[in-house]
Image (cartoon, rainbow, N blue to C red; front, side, top):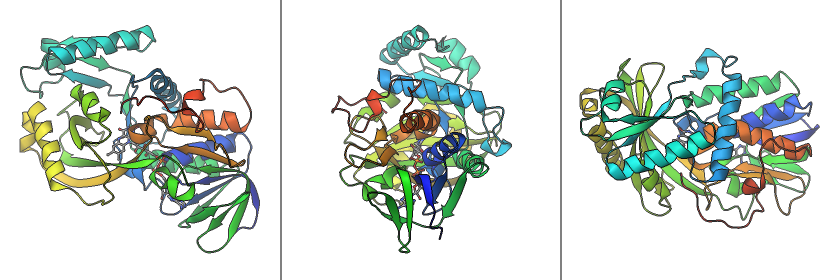
Length: 376
Ligand SMILES: Cc1cc2nc3c(=O)[nH]c(=O)nc-3n(C[C@H](O)[C@H](O)[C@H](O)COP(=O)(O)OP(=O)(O)OC[C@H]3O[C@@H](n4cnc5c(N)ncnc54)[C@H](O)[C@@H]3O)c2cc1C
């Protein structure tokens, strides 16, 4: 084990830690990346990889929009394995109340320069003919896209290693001290800055973090090319994602570049058990079939679960810890950490380098005052 001192130690090589590592390395900082398991093997492997602009609060919008622009900037350089697909999203309205929400969203997005298009029932049926009849319409967001997140994390780590980074794989951090991290094998790595980007494990290393696990289920099908063209999400999703106590399911489906369909999603609090919960899974698939009756005839290949790292106000923690002088946090990204990894890395590094970030950081600072919860 190296006894060197690094400018920065990054704990966790999920998509957030990997993106932070490459951003630090680009600044010319020496970086140690310490990952207990495999690169991108935590929530990053479990997530859907939907790069989506969200509008539940101005702060959530600012970070998702900024991050999406950063993804677009690097889309040409991403390796094929990242499977970047500019498929866009359609938010589906099943009734008039949801159509009113689609129109509200249309105004919010267009006022802020995000291209969007309202679809009536006929144009929705034409653009996605597998959807059931009787839906009222929807909102198309053509700029949203999809990636395969573990390959993106791998790519970011490789980019960091090509600069001034070293990777310590398969070694768990036991504790964070005043100026170093102690590993479970008893060795230490000293650093000027320590970044806790251990996702849903982050509270185990930094006591007092208000980050809770929020379990999700996903199902992937066999290959059915051209079954769908867009990521489809029910507008009712927002209602279910609001709940911070009850178990919820919502229709959310993604066409993969492989021709497979990734079906989500569920949300459960206070569940540590990673096994598949058949009752939740059944509710989730029933909901999907309500929207896409043709799904009944398709075969699924695999089902899995993962844990989102949720904060009380649904915004991530990005910036210096309020007590530990060398510690920075990049955690608590709930269901948007794939999207917001790039924005997180930029604004974290701006704070480390004492530069003005591209977007205001106050809403994401770990020391922020308690706020009303935003949504998903
Ligand atoms: C079902 C589901 C669907 C989702 N869909 C989307 C989506 O469509 N779009 C989107 O933007 N987001 C989505 N998300 C959220 C997204 O997956 C997460 O926000 C994101 O992956 C978080 O990345 P991370 O790097 O913070 O955490 P993780 O990927 O969990 O990485 C943390 C890493 O830290 C390591 N680690 C933990 N403890 C230690 C230790 N002591 N020492 C060293 N290493 C340690 C772990 O091994 C792990 O690799 C979804 C999540 C789920 C569960």
